[in-house]
Length: 168
Image 1 (cartoon, one colour):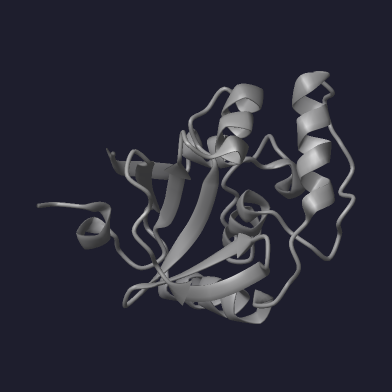
Image 2 (cartoon, one colour):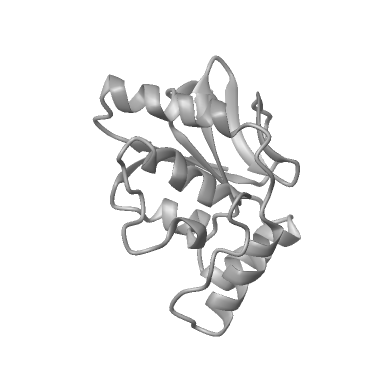
């Protein structure tokens, strides 16, 4: 059986939507995209992601039954860019999670505000982290969105990534 795990290549972006998660459901209602979390696949079964405990590297898990998982790939990365991405991920470990930024993105989308401030300058949310990871290598995933305003849906619809496939 072909799954996202045996199709993933190092530095692919994993985009997940779990309809049973209240947070993913809220993100979907606010942004309109069925994308609630993102992580980056480092290879050898390891991912780096920003979650409630901050930025961590860990083995990937099986997402809950019923979750939708996409692989998004930035094509034509140079060796130098790949190295910068890996270095940024490594240096970002233990960076705190930006709970306040989630509220700002909620305000932005609910009240149709054009931009919101970065209220958690040293902390990151998952999609901001992924945007910063690629920005560190000179790749802007979402050129019309500040990194701190980036949502998983923005990454999913980015013109810079190729969607490999979605799995449920």
